[in-house]
Amino acid sequence: MDWRQLWEICSAPDNVPIVGLIPLLAFFIYLAWKQAHANDQLIAQLEADPAMAKTHHRKTWPFKPGWQKEVHVWPFLLRIEFLAAIIVTIILMVWSISLNAPLEEPANPNLTMNPAKAPWYFLGLQEMLVYFDPWIAGVVMPTMIIVGLMVIPYVDTNPLGSGYYTWKQRKFSISTFLFGFVILWVAMIIIGTFIRGPGWQWFWPGQTWDHNRLIYEVNRDLPDIFGITSNAAKAIFGAIVVGGYYLIGGGLVYSLFRRRMGKDFQRMSLLQFSMVQFLLLTMVALPLKMGLRLLWHIKYVWITPWFNV
Amino acid sequence: MADENNPNRTNGKNGNKVGLLEKVTAGVKGDIQSLKTDIPTKAKEQIEGLKDPTKTQVYTSIFRHKHDDTPRNRALGVLSNVFLHLHPAKINRDAVRYSYTWGMGGITFYLFIILTYTGVLLMFYYHPSKVQAFRDVLYLEHDVPFGKILRNMHRWAAHLMVIAVWLHMFRVFLTGSYKKPREFNWNIGVLLLVFTLLLSFTGYLLPDDQLGFWAVTVGTNMARATPLLGHEGPFGSMLGMTPYNDVRFGLLGGSIVDANALLRSYIWHCIGIPIVASVLMIVHFWRVRKDGGISGPAPVMLEAEADKPRRGPKAAGE
Image (tube, rainbow over the protein chains, first blue to last red):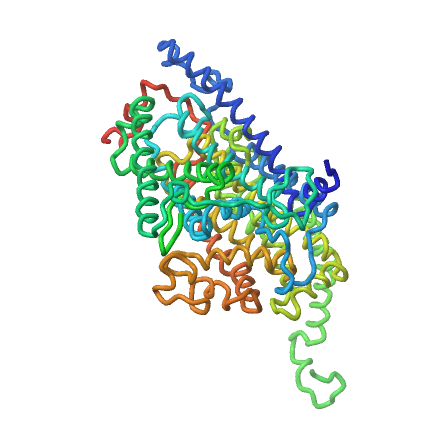
């Protein structure tokens, strides 16, 4: 266990935000879960007691008839905003006094940094480069993330859970977002920051970054395992595998929605549903491809003269 | 002026007409009398008046309402102020609960203001040229008064803003706040997320050190592989893409990260993206109000009510 190495990675000035992000994210997930749990209990109570549902004010916070429903922004909101601004300023002051922004040697195109890392918030994308060619990891995937985020409001047909924390009314959408945000985005950033060392090789936390380490891995392509040699056959085979993934996966998503989320499914148009199918399967393809690469050293699934997947 | 000793003068002894001397003397006497009595009285009155500055013309021209603690004045304090009128005068009693909102949207905006402020100060000391840029950063670090804390604060506020934007989006998702009628504003928010990341990324190159140079090299190398538009991307070479005319060349103003790339990222960082992001922010905040204010904490809905029309005449028709 090389504690010094671990400390060097964690205390690198630009890695501090990620070190801070982890407890912050844990805290806010806890805070959201706590409120979702309380709301879910209230919902269960009201569903069981329709008479109560008619008169209840439907929030977990206390409310009594005769209390004012609205409060003045000045001072009740503005004082909170003002305090938040002061607290953020103090945090920034202390942070800026105690920790210096990084400054390396002058830019030198002839001296490659090893590892050469993107800014920390893009390290998830850089980590994807291990598993996909740059046109997928660097261009298609980021575009799909942005497009995927933008279509969320138009494909989520569940009218419940608007304006309050809940888990039971939105199990699918919340678990999908948690999977995308916490596992695929934040965890990939953590891998890219703390695990990837020189040569973008995998170093466990506490393992010394050895600049001379060589890994003898033979990566194979999926068609090779099946003994396919001709280029045309490889292209056709890959197309079948990728197409098959989307077809079979699409069927699985369909049966999941029909069985588990019948009401949401009925509310969805075919366009909405096929968007969900496609984006969901593309998102799940990332950890699947990671598994293929890390466990079985499979590099490409689909090989054509123009692009490889 | 008339000369009193002039023997040729003709006026002064004409009947009972008052002479000029008498006139002037009487006038001066009157002035002195008024200085002794009227002016002190007036001054006393005006000094008394200053004890309540809220009644002065200067004050009333700036603040258009009284400051007494009345509901009307509390509302006017928000509504008649250009910066505060972003808010409504009154909000739901639960909407001030920060366990619901986390305050992350507001903190993001506050960090943007801090970044604009520290960024403008940094611009006074920075030349976006290969010769000067790195030296300017050294100058800031070692010679400019408070230069080091200025740069530190700009950098850490930028990182904090990225985190705050993520957490804001996380909260908005978990509370289902993107749902009808706020779909469009969620989209503006996604664009703002992208521009926040781009702002941070373009700033990364500006110190012109190894860290920024290689981070931007790694980042923009991806653009080589853009399908159709990059020279290493699928079908790129078929469309005649080379390192000297593809999308990466457009981003960097060259085939490597060099002087043009530094200038381009400087202009995007300091002018281009902040303007676009500011416009989007205006739309974002405006839509928060127009879409019915902050989404919650709303009363919980029950499963049985899911497909019933909601309140309001519009919903009834759907």
